Amino acid sequence: MSEMTVSREALETRVTEALVEFGAEASAINPDATWDELDVDSLDLVELAQIIEDEYGVELREADMEKMKTVGDAVEMVAARLS
Image 1 (cartoon, one colour):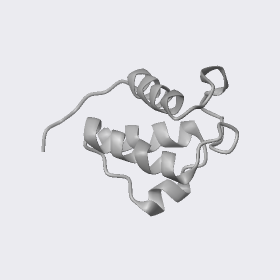
Image 2 (image 1 turned 90 degrees about the vertical axis):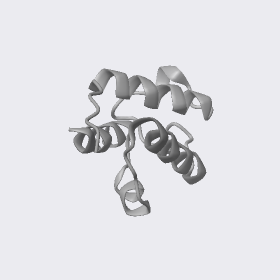
Image 3 (image 1 turned 180 degrees about the vertical axis):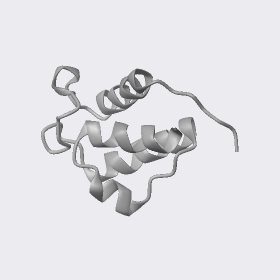
C-alpha cells in the first residue's frame, strides 16, 4: 500500500471545494459547520465519500458517515486514516 502525505490544509481545501460544488456557501464552510447548516444531504455525503476514496484512497463506510456531523469531523477522520 502506498503512503500518501496530504496536509490537513489541502484536505480541508478539497472538502470545501466539494461542498461548494454541492451548493454550500463557501463563506459558511468551517470546521464546526454541520451538514444541516450547509444544506448538505445524505446523497451529497455519499458523493463526498466517493471523492475522498477516489482522490485519497480512504474508504468511508455508512457507519463512518453517520459519525461525521461536521466538516471538521470529516477532515479529522480522513486525516487519521491517511497517517
